[in-house]
Length: 87
Image 1 (cartoon, rainbow, N blue to C red):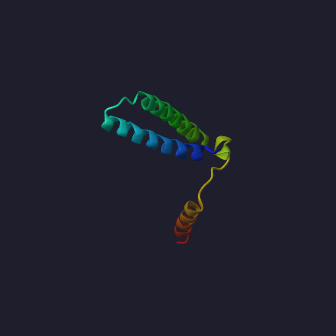
Image 2: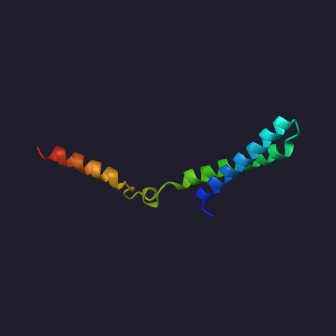
Image 3: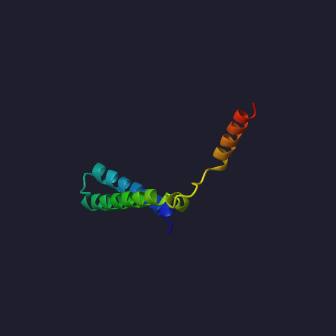
């Protein structure tokens, strides 16, 4: 399972647990078990998101080579340089 899939599944599960907690509050019953599950899921979600944020550095950028630029940015930069150089 990829990290993005895991994050989306965790968010769905958190929403389900939140709904269960809300129902328990409305009924006036204890929601201790759901609160513990919510805390565990939230911790796992934060850890996973931190891992994804750390991995987003490209290997080329990490090793000092030219970083990736999107085709849209290349088109904008290319167009701007052509306008400046064509005087």
